[in-house]
Length: 171
Figure (tube, rainbow, N blue to C red):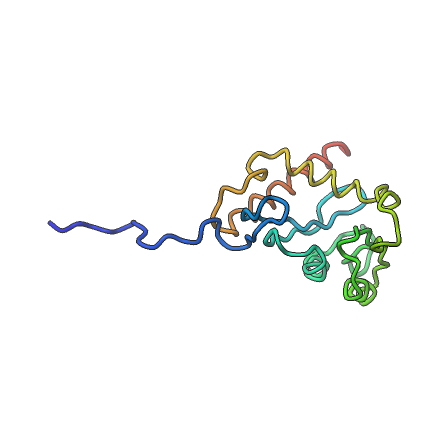
């Protein structure tokens, strides 16, 4: 009888899978960054994953385009995008402001070297609170999965649980 190799992996994949990059704040260890777009109450509207070394301004247009239609309860075409965008100084680029205006969104982005980040904090804390809610879910605190689709599915599940907790207060 010969040895069977059925079901065994001969070549190992890249450790950590795709959508990872060297984290600039954690001594170059590979990591994943979540890009999150929320509404005024902190309910996640869109989530994207990227490597930890990617700037926050790069996937901004992809976040806008991935927002699903929002039902307003009124007849007519459902609204797709928010009216205003409050973003931190990482999104202070001409292309980000242009992308916002092209989609009919008023950009409220703090300027680097000009504005104090304290003024933006009264709006930015909503997104940081949503990140904290996602951070309470142990599976999302540390990325254990090699495949990005599985980690993205767990992130979407966490966002669904955040949304469910927000809905429970209404009923």
